[in-house]
Image (cartoon, rainbow, N blue to C red; front, top):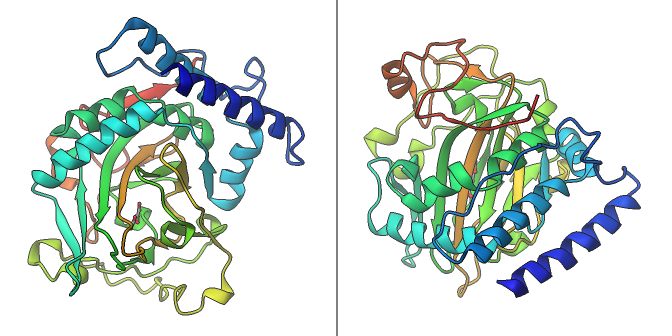
Length: 343
Ligand SMILES: O=C(O)CCC(=O)C(=O)O
């Protein structure tokens, strides 16, 4: 544990030095920046010696305090920012255990997106945080909510849902390019997703983002992801909408777009705006697998938006049960407020 803390301090010192000479701006001054929270992001979820608990808490505090203005600006401008080594290895280890339990016992929402002839599969589950303790603790107690809030510049953050993507060794399946917000039962600019690999991933196998597409005005027709499984329960039909234009062929015309992706290690997180065009991943070498734990976070301007059709995952029933209607601020036990900046 001490080794981990020492490594972190070296990493953060280097990062702070780089930020202070970064052309886009200096490191955030915790006393003057309104987005720097004044409270601890949460305790340690795993039983252990109090010294370890303190070190984990210090780790989280240091990481959150060192998010630079340049990183906030990058998210604002590009729609995505890759934060390096911001999640403690303890959380990664715990989530890996959670994924193992989840794959062994999937929720009713789980799907196999792809089953290739070579036997490789791409497993997906969502909203499993209610069954899997390791997911729940990460959602409620890790610094992730605070990181999302800080990067979005929101004053408070509610959790929306988790999504798990597990590709077995050599899986080639790539997620088609799409935007997230049009499928969701909420609407707002301040929706952020975190794509967090639990194993090392090469750039060619990581999620890809079309730079700046979160600010494009076009209203694109989205894909029915149910086509991928063929299963009746997965089908999503979009409302006939004459204002929707065909979705751009990013994969077929890659040269026309500025596509961002990174080699990533466990502990790195790509935080992206839910209006971003993104897709890819997969394309794995035969000995490589990929496990990703993804969380979605809702900031200041987000409101419930029950769409006529096309919601995936469809939260309309759960929202109705909790009395949430279009236009309401998201809340309740299912979408808890996890972080709030001090007034
Ligand atoms: O990892 C993937 O394959 C897809 C991820 C994705 O589309 C998302 O996180 O919204």
